[in-house]
Amino acid sequence: MEDRVMLKGSVALAEGALAAGCRYYFGYPITPQNDIPEYLSMHMRDRGGVFIQAESEIASINMLLGAAAAGARTMTSSSGPGISLMQEGLSYMAGSELPCVVVNITRSGPGLGGISATQGDYNQATCGGGHGDYSLIVLAPSSVQEMYDLAIKAFELADKYRNPAMILGDAILGQMKEPVLLVEPKSLSYEKPWALTGAKGRKPQRVKSLYLQDGDMEVHNLKLAAKYRRLAEEDTMVEVDMDDGAEIAVVAFGSCARIVISAVDAAREEGMRVAYVRPITLFPFPSAAIRDVSSRVGKVLTVEMNTGQMVRDVRLAAAPGSEVHLLAKPGGALPTPQLILEEMKKLLRQGAESK
Amino acid sequence: MKQVFKRPETLIKTTNHFCPGCHHGTAHRLIAEAIDLFQISDSTVGVAGVGCGVFLYDYLALDVCEAPHGRAPAVATGLKRVHPENIVFTYQGDGDLAAIGMSEIIHTANRGENITVIFINNCVYGMTGGQMAPTTLSGQKTTTSPQGRDYAYDGYPIRMTEMLAALDGVAFAARVAVNKPATLNKAGQAVNKAFEMQINKMGLSFVEILSACPTNWGMTPSESLRRIEAEMIPFYPLGIFKEKK
Image 1 (cartoon, each protein chain N blue to C red):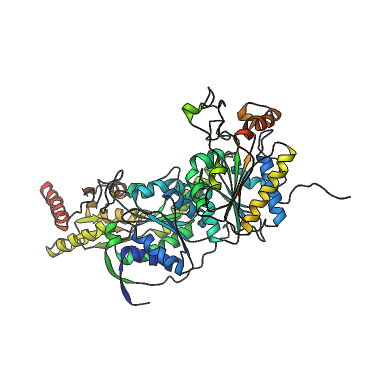
Image 2 (image 1 turned 180 degrees about the horizontal axis):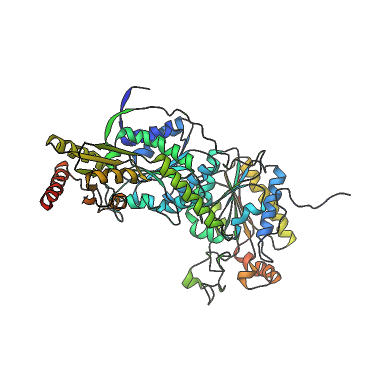
């Protein structure tokens, strides 16, 4: 399996899920992610799995809840409006410590919005999204290869931390084709002694998120918080590419980061020294990398396909004294490399003028 | 000496939290008896809906999963599809199943998921303190229908069993009561039949149990039993509405 194959992002993601041993998919149609259920409706049952088209996203996520409680690796995919409907179930799964993978191929919004690529669901994905004191594990692929690799990684992290994981993509990542190396995961073994399989040879067990006795909820919340701290320590992922003596860093994730790479390449051709930071995990956010880079470059430009959501995390992480700027392009319009390059030059000129 | 009555093995010996005259305890016992009868306690997984029945795991010695309000049939779908050899049942009240969970029960039934649904209809939201349910009867005073339910204003009660019996995926649909020995015996038979249907992979089996909620009805337990006979059964007729052969 070392040969590269040309795959669409949605298909690469579906193949990643299958490679990770996911055999239970539940979902409801919504544009622009229909390639995923359509592909899996064909291939899941061929590989001994279950594909169910649910009556709603509410039903989908609760089928995941049941399948996860039964000990299986399970996945759904949707887009903004559907992901909103899943928030109740995601909160219950986080509270019940159930692993699953939820793919959000975003739409622009709010409301019915549009189907073009945006990053307007960053806050919903990284700030919990549903009710209560919890977080999702959030992974942001930026290539078709990562649609495959991070699908596998999402299942591993979800199982490791017993928490739902979200893959935040968009229509660009879902629709484009690139060569992909289909590397099978080394191990598929994951012990789940807590799973509800019928109490044969053991005491009955329960999967629950209700804590009514005095103090129990606090203990549970603190346990979840400790888990998220460990997640941040052990599994934060970020790509940093910094020139010696870089004067400005550009931070972007997902498809937007690809456009930023073109701008960074153009800047380097013009002799600028720059840094490029791409968060791969959006939760946990790579705050340490942002702090380190910003302390050295002084100026940070965050580029997002929304009105400015990740920039808050960048500002919280940035080293004292560093400047954080925003280039925001919402509503399905794409920032061009030229636009980003001009913004970088403008910020550097401002710095030169003020000196 | 021959033992003629005992606590079912599946029913945990403990004090329950139910109010005096509440029928949840009786319904739990019927489920425990069925599980003992078929000797399936080590392969059964229960799904508890939100409401007074959520503490199912405190009373039945089984693996139990909590479901969000109304979503138990979807959760049960996931559990059953992963382990089709297991017996999976949901335990849901009327607010849970007939209001917020209407979509999940209809579509799970329509898919013919091979699960069992035990539906407790007591015409009221119990755990939240006695609000009007989709099943609340005409004139019934609740905390959100203080003048009494008015069909012209609030709409009509829903007969779930009749509705589900019309779906092809449903193998068994029955409405029973537990207000007196004669109805209780039939209720036990219906719950047994429902689990037997699942064991035989016949499709979704559904048992609606007309139940008393004396606390939220503002009645004594004995008045509540009389209300079931006088008001509930005339509106919600007992019987087997569907039985696939």
